[in-house]
Image (tube, rainbow, N blue to C red; front, side, top):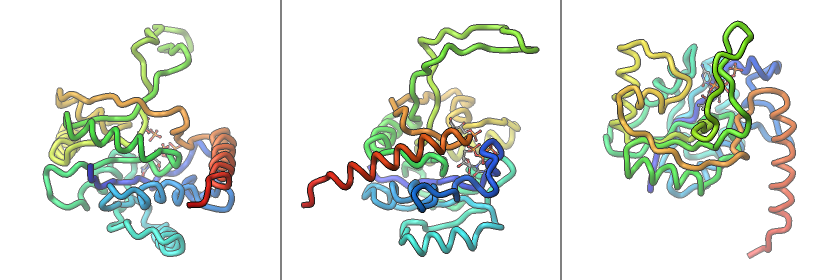
Length: 237
Ligand SMILES: Nc1ccn([C@@H]2O[C@H](COP(=O)(O)OP(=O)(O)OP(=O)(O)O)[C@@H](O)[C@H]2O)c(=O)n1
Ligand SMILES: C[C@](O)(CO)[C@H](O)COP(=O)(O)O
């Protein structure tokens, strides 16, 4: 199932507390964003990447794209104050084919796999909108004034991941509607839900983490080590 992808990489990385954009931090000497871009560069079903960046980091990203031979980046779009606006700006750069499958992916999620991508694309083609998610492992409390106001029933709770995948017509309408009605969301599927449309949940992976706080970089280093070891042990064809 062919698709295009908008990869958002224009955040501040506040929770990471780094000196720089967290997607420019390196794992074994390679920037996080390159791990993410490589997954799509090496996926034959990916027909194009729109990378959303801060204008002030354009030169840095262009240099990385060149150095690491990321050829599928067809457009650069300017990030917005919030992730929602960054996604909107990225979508605006895509072609106008209404039935293409388009994905939105966090640049800070470098460990997504082709199998996960293929499954969420297939689900979006079938029902218009889909997202990767994993069952939550902890008991989730709703809190007000530092006291529990509600304990949510864990059996029905899933943690949303990305990519989130959509038919182009669905996500474009959802983002336009979201702007008109001033919806503020932290993921794109929420905008489709606001339209009352079905969003299918596709099982993701606990390894598809979003690098958000310093602890996540420690986990990411481990994952990279494991992948390098697996590559070294893979028989040469
Ligand atoms: N205005 C924004 C905010 C976020 N993002 C991107 O959206 C993804 C998920 O966002 P998040 O993890 O929140 O990144 P930051 O906003 O950078 O982190 P923080 O909230 O800690 O500042 C990241 O790849 C980030 O670069 C973006 O493109 N534009
Ligand atoms: C889109 C997302 O990764 C799904 O879990 C998450 O909502 C992004 O939130 P952030 O605050 O922009 O990291």
